[in-house]
Length: 339
Image (cartoon, rainbow, N blue to C red; front, side, top):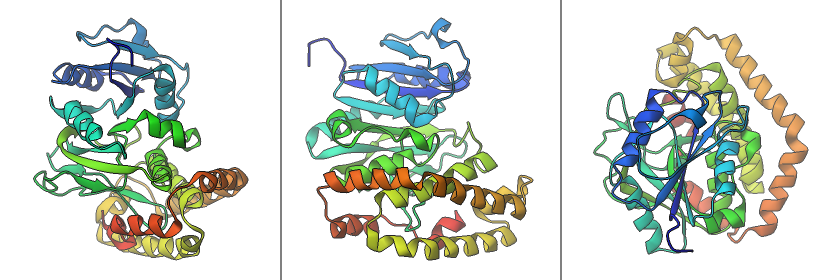
């Protein structure tokens, strides 16, 4: 690429643009790797164009005028840039000084790697938030290592796909498979993109040295009805678009198993399901969320099937290869319900 242009575009969607974004920008200023620009996508009414950040790297602001969602916001940044790599970063994260350098070095070592996952710590307790992602056979996804010690997963290795909270993507891969599916609006768009990349034969690496602190679910809330709605609906979309035909009949049974384990978690006050109830929600409200998720999926089914067909037309991996990789990075319905 032309001399002097950055190697990486860091896309940061923001809704509130408060102190956490300022802290994130400050952490980026401390990066040892300097060949990057930052694109802030103002999904709220923050008037970011008038905000000055004391940083030395290039900063651009994109203002859609409305909240277009996470995936659409990142897509705007991708489309506005010409760099060979795109990093995604939540505005409530603080990357360590060696974060971007570690991701770029890992990507440059293997041209078959299209995605890199960060080592993400929870800002509150310092425990691990994510070391790549896992997939359940009902389409749900969960952070690998979530809630474990920050000392776990110390070695860089293959993983299924990254959490877009803090990830690096190769533009050539995005040109092949397409950017984030904007219909998801919020949650699971990184799962969908990651599985589409797997179908095209791209690899993902977890980079243990690329560490980030994250204030988990600050926008929609860790156990809010809004988050529950999008997660439940979008996991259906992930499976319908991406799972091989032989895996789809198992979806309802795996989901039912998860629901039963979540009912037990509610009774014992455990996990996210127990926290959902402690936050003032009810089983009746949860049932309404499930009904709405399935209804919205039914309405969009023709479009989902068209997208599924497009993925199949361009795939390089066989269904057996896809499922072998998924099984190596799977989480069971019981494990998912207990988190």
